[in-house]
Amino acid sequence: MTGDLNIPVMKVLVATEKPFAASAVQGIRDIVEGAGHELALLEKYTEKEQLLAAVADADALIVRSDKVTAEVIEAAKQLKVVVRAGAGYDNIDLKACTEHGIVAENTPGQNSNAVAELAIAMMLYMSRNQFTPGTGCELSGKRLGIQGFGNIGQLVAKKAVALGMDVVIYTNEIKEKHQRWKATFSLEHLYSSCDFVSVNIPATPFTKGCVNYNLISKMPKGGCLINTARKEVVCEEGLDKALAERPDLKYATDIAPATYAELKEKYGKQIYATPKKMGAETAEANMNAGLAAANQIVAFFETGCTRFQVNK
Ligand code: 3PG
Image (cartoon, rainbow, N blue to C red; front, top):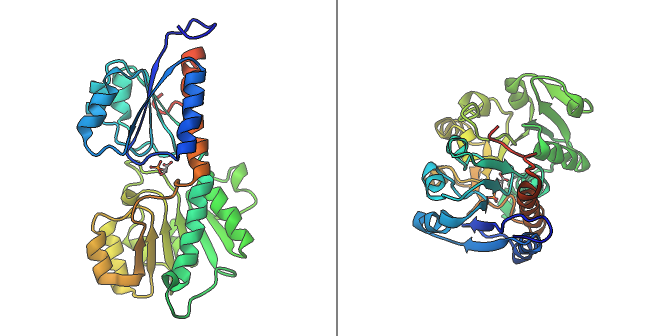
């Protein structure tokens, strides 16, 4: 039993193929052990079997983009709660969690600033010829469209304004957070009127392939699409076709398309993908998301708190 609350000692597994910064792991340990629980670490694993073995006796699980499939859930006989330390939870089989009575949570907003900074960095990188010789262009005075105005989209918008950009957001209803911004109800209009478009939407069955040829090919001359969301939201066939027809268009992404090698071969500097998803790869984001995940787990065991549950 833990301390005064007489809560059984729980085993909290942190399973991260892409590990948190050491300082964040220490912070997670302090929270978990400080609450009287046990911490187990599985980092940089390469085989699914390692995860299946590690989850067998875990009561709680913290992951990043690690795939928590139905098979993982089936193997995790003691699991009560899984927290995706991050925003997007498309890597978690929510149906399997629900069927096994497991609470699935995320930590919204905790790594948003890191992702927003990367979106801005990608715009600068692409507008300066990927830091190779040649004449580029400035962001100041250019128009940026934001597709997806959640935590990340809002931060991208604020930073872009500070750089002198004219920001337009896409929305289908004006809520309070939209009010001070120029908004459009038409995605076609967003793409056809913006020099840059930053995609900040989650990957869901509804958003899969939604950034298609029709939209990409509408971008003005020299248009640049920035994707720090998920590769699935961009239709690769449509992207291929648009880049082929329009040598002036550019695409930068934090999640390489499935056919990246082929696209890179064909389009060279028109396309850029980070070698490994790095949007949330900052010490600060690791700390924020990791500690939030640990605190959410401790609260779940202490009070039954499920504030950030995503499989309701
Ligand atoms: C998220 O959804 O929070 C980001 O894509 C970060 O993913 P990562 O934890 O795998 O870096």
